[in-house]
Structure formats: structure tokens, C-alpha cells
Image 1 (tube, rainbow, N blue to C red):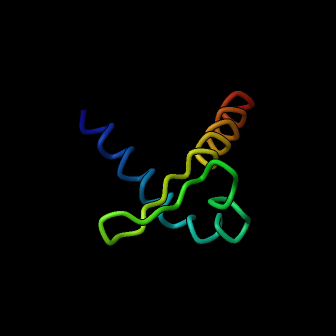
Image 2: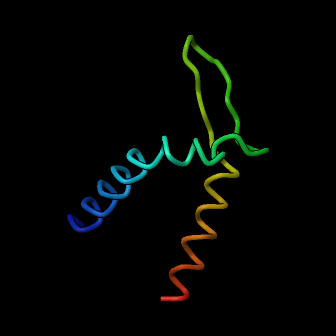
Length: 64
């Protein structure tokens, strides 16, 4: 159980580090990535970006 917590923590840490780089490359601005304001806060749901990065990670995992 603790292994999964560590893996999830490290994954979130890596995602937060690479978010600015990915935004410069155009990720987060794809069709299907939703930005909206609700309750005085801006919300961002990167549906298409998540699917695309998941397919890339899956392809890399299959090659290794």
C-alpha cells in the first residue's frame, strides 16, 4: 500500500514539474481540454491531453 502512495506522489510531482514545458508545447490547449470559471475559481480539465499522454506512455511501455 505504501508503495502505491509513493508512486502516486512521485507521479504528481513529475506532472507538476513538466506542466509548464507541456503547455509551451501546446498540450492543454487541445480540442477537448476544458477551461471554465465556477465558484470564483478557474477550473481546467485536460481530457484530450490526458488521453494523448496516456497513449504515448503506453507505447513507450510496450517498447521497453
